[in-house]
Amino acid sequence: MIDILSTQESELAIQSSSNQATQLALYYAQGSKLNAESKRDLTQVSYGSKERLFNEADSLKELASNILTSANQGKALVENAVSLSATTAANVQIASNAIIKLASDIGSVFSMVNAADFGSEIYEMADECNALISKTAYLAESASQNSMELALLAAEVDIPTLNSTAEKTNVSIKDLVSVLNDQLATVKEHLNSTCEALKNTNAGESQANETFKLTSVNRKALENSLILANEKLNLNLELKNQSFKSFTVSFDYLKEPFEGGKGIVKNYYILLVKNSDRLTFTITDAEQAILNQKVIGEVVPSETDPQQSASITINAKDLIDSDGDPIQLGQAYAIFVLAAYTSDYKRAINNYNDYLSAPSQPFSLSHTLQHAESESIKLNKTTNTLNFGLIENTDFKVEYRCMYLLIDSNGKDGSLSFPFSTSIAEQVNAGCYDVGHIVKKKLNEKESSIVGTTQITETTTDNFGNPLIEGKTYLPVVLSFCSEKSTVVNQFTNSLSALKLTAPFIFQTTK
Image 1 (cartoon, rainbow, N blue to C red):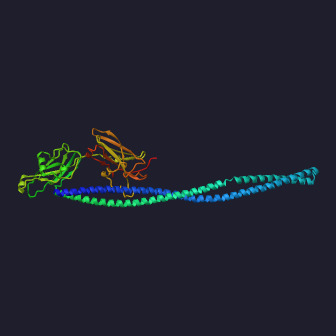
Image 2 (cartoon, one colour; image 1 turned 180 degrees about the vertical axis):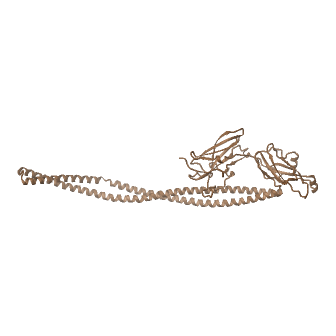
Image 3 (cartoon, rainbow, N blue to C red; image 1 turned 90 degrees about the horizontal axis):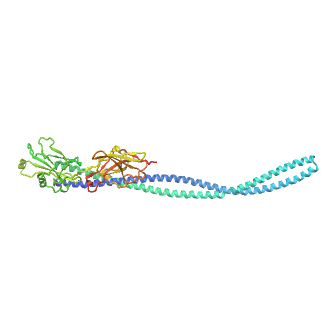
């Protein structure tokens, strides 16, 4: 019997260890998937930005080319205009000089007519002619001045600088388009690689999930087999409700082999044995412990008990094991039950040995740390500060690790896409959680009210080490982690806040 149970326990221990390992592998595989998705998403954003910039620059490239063409045409036209305006100015100047010379000659003639024939008809004609030529001479001088100014203005047009600037602008735009094209190609290549990486992590996550499911099925089958074997072969011996103060032992009575019998067991003795001795503990050791009054419980069976079973809660205070040593928190133990047969039954079967059960599953007593109350875990959106609270033993040294789990936006109910438990939270690397700053307020001699806070910034990461993403939804969790000395840390059990009862938040950076 003991061999059967021991073999099944060993197989279950191996399978449970394998199941925990595959669960952790699945956790990290799904973390790699989330990391790959994050990189893919960020690269897609970068690619979209680069593509828009490239398209804008490419449209400017055509505009710069048109400007250069216009500048070249303007250069030719301005050069031609300068030449024509200079020629025009010279010709107008020659004509103006001739008109002024003519006006001077006519003025001399008019002076002679004025002296010889003043008041005559020829005088009137000469006077009119002189007035007209004087006006023409004035207009000719104005035209000459305007043509020279035109030539000067045409010559002042800085068409070479304009043309040079247009050429440089065209070259710069082409260079910019070339650089942006190279950058776009690089980002596209990186996007392809991130998509390929995501594809690979999806495959790895799928394989890890299948392996975890298989080990879970195997573990469950071994658990059921051990439960059945314990029920049929070991009095259905169980331990329940373990705490640092007490635990409950339950077992079934031995069945009466003879119909109409008066009971075959006079007493059941419950013994506490160090786990290191559980495989070598014999009935002789049990009888010696009973003789030395090193038992932790005694049950006198009742024939009228309809349940034919016992359940006894044992106070851990001042408790001793089968060696007479006081019980220690964090120490592994096993329970044995010795059934002392009645003298009549021993004579009837001609066997004077009592019955010793196989050991129970190993167990230890410890202080379970209090976890942060779910309703207290809230984000102050104004300051991006996470707050939490709880009540804990004043003397306990506890570190409160705050973690942020990415909610699966593709999930049907907005749940996590990876397993997360106390054992996994204990494995989260430093740098992937923030330690809360706590303020204690003593309530009484033993307990204190604890209020914790931690600041969420742009450098804050999720539990996988990825920076929090703007607009994504996260679930805050707090792990109560024992920070006592290594010599006593096994006397404590860490505790994780309740995931399903905690409100998630959308990450936004404060401006």
